[in-house]
Image (cartoon, rainbow, N blue to C red; front, top):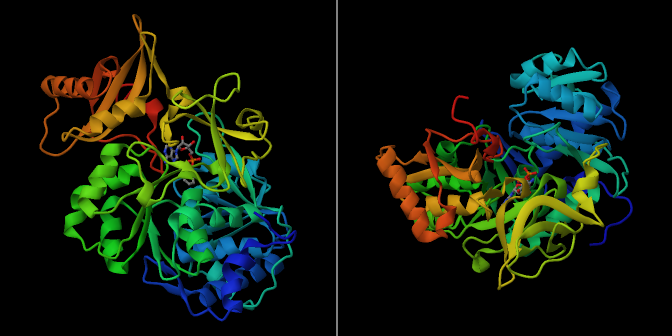
Length: 510
Ligand code: 3UK
């Protein structure tokens, strides 16, 4: 991938369309009925850019925190930050003051733009963060709100002439342990991810309508709902609250064609598909967690659509191993996306042959640059990014996910990957959701424990536990069966749809 030395991603993704006379194309639709063309988004981003530069004194390189649900305004703020050559630090809507303080300190945030409906936690954080010089609220009627202030500025702006290698965004990972890590990405990284996975796998068209659940603060959502549609002149629907219940009617209402969400959401939506008109939908993408074969089948049976799986990471900005719908292989993630290389390493860093489980290593146009963090040394080794996932390459060259490397269960001397047991359980009609972890055991070191959420109509109890254990023994190596089964009403998940495994190792409520 070649890029010119000087590059601003806002010029390439947004202003280009207006310059080409395509400004009247639809760009964004919001939950509140808002419909913005590319020209509308540009005008709004330009006004905010003028406000940032003239009123707030934002300089190139300053870090600007963005806090809001998925809305067109949030996207305008993001592009305004790019236009002034600053660094966008989008944060998850559910973050509390304590977590916001960590982000503000780590990323040395000087300015913040915040949806007024999420003002409280950021206001609490601000009292402890002297480095945060200004805070402006959007979606606000107030005279000092962003909308009023921006309206007083010109809708013309000439973008700061940034370098392709200038940092343009810092995305924080939602690590379950330790302090959050900020990952730095450059203007060229933003364009690189638009050229890799979308061009080779997704193949979107200019008339596609993208929709999905991931927050824009999660790079899965930023790519899938903003960068990828805009890179081809398509449009996106931004939903403020995208639950499985609200996604299906929204797909029907907006006639969406491309859907981005996580495996758990496909499982939850499958039984409800028949009640909605999904005839507009052509492509469905699953990422964030492993996609069990049973979930692929469930969604295919319900919707007729073969899911596109892809593994991405905040550290690599977006998806690097995937497949298109014609080359889906149940249970496998896919093959490296053109532009990326991947291999499996043993603990000494030697490349393992096909069939052996080891650490996934990835190299490509994007890569991990933790902001001022010792953990950089653990993630990047000789130019290879170690994602923390255990994988194997099968006989067909497909990469097959096993587990997070620190989640491998060792029981009675056997290595057991929790997700394999989860996949086996999910094939049983009683199982709606499940999570499998290792819990300490005197005799075996660890035993396999399954936490199971049942579909309606099934009764928890020892009989069903026994049935599920026998079911697993009949479908995978018997030593992998869950010796302990706990029934719960729901599983603990992050805002990005990831199972919080550490919360399964203790009994519910402990
Ligand atoms: C896991 C998967 C198996 C895997 C992400 C698409 O999830 C994203 O980024 P995060 O930083 O987490 C990265 C980790 O999540 N994972 C993600 N996708 C898959 N495991 N199959 C998958 N398809 O452990 C990975 O290391 O939150 C996903 C695009 C952008 C992203 N940031």
